[in-house]
Image (cartoon, rainbow, N blue to C red; front, top):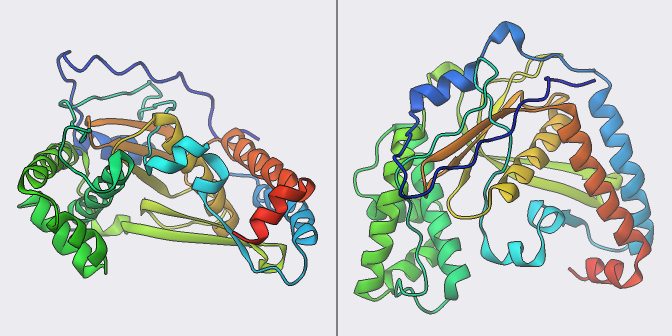
Amino acid sequence: MVLVAPRPPFRPAPPVDAPADRGTGAELLTLLRGDAAARPRFDPGLAGGLRAWLEDAAYDVVVARGEHAPPLFLGPRQLLCSHDEQGDGSGGVDGRGVDGRGAATDRTGGGGGAMDGDGAMDGGGAATDRILLSRLVQALFRQLVHTGDVHDPLADALDALRAAGGEADVRQVESLPEGARTVLAETLAIHTRNLSGLVPRFAPGWMPRTNDRVAIPLGGGRIVLHGMFDLVVGLPQPRTASLCALGLSSDGPWAVARRSLHYLSLLETLRSGAPPFRLALLESASGRYGVEDVREEHLRAIASHIAAWLEQAATEPTHAHALSHG
């Protein structure tokens, strides 16, 4: 069963020096809402079938690792990313955009700016710089969702990290040379400006929830698939896909974050019995966004990938040994 008919692919983003076609939070909210009467219903046996598929693959891994092995926690970074992608902490999306009329959508805002090797952020390398920037942008995204305002991007982000226990990140920023902090503040201001124009103002009835963690035990809890939605809105409804999920990419390839959103949609299907019916991904560096419907083929493709990953872990002794000591 296909949840939603296939949609045309994204158009390529315009060059950086092309006139910006900037989307708005109100436009994005309209695309997420869509036609409530047309929201897809799903096969009640879909979640059970996907779980059975994954449980079969997980059983072989549990046997290969031995009954005394500690639980194996697997997230999108382990399951979906290549070695190079794992190292940069970045996200991104590459997908089909659909609006409420079924047309492809792709909006690009003002030019983004990410720190590079000349940005004077030293001590951790470019990958560490991107990870730190990503955490700061995530903090501001949460602030925009819940309050709608950011006054001083760097100061507000640091306050949010302190409140969340991210003292190590705060110390890293505070230890930067003055030039590096200036570059960071300017870069963060660009991301914030783009997000301020894109993040919708959700009415309380949408129940916006940031950093929504989901964990799915397999093999009697010996294997745990886990992940975290940047933002989920809506409430689960019996036999109907009723949630919307939003992902945030601060710097990285579209394809990685799109796979991650499909992975999280699979976990939500296993958790509540239904996937989100619509996904959106916001790219804070450029102001670009994409919106797409979740389809059964997305869920099956990710489940097939995870099952194949688990089968490899069970059949390759060196891989299984590494997992048992990971």
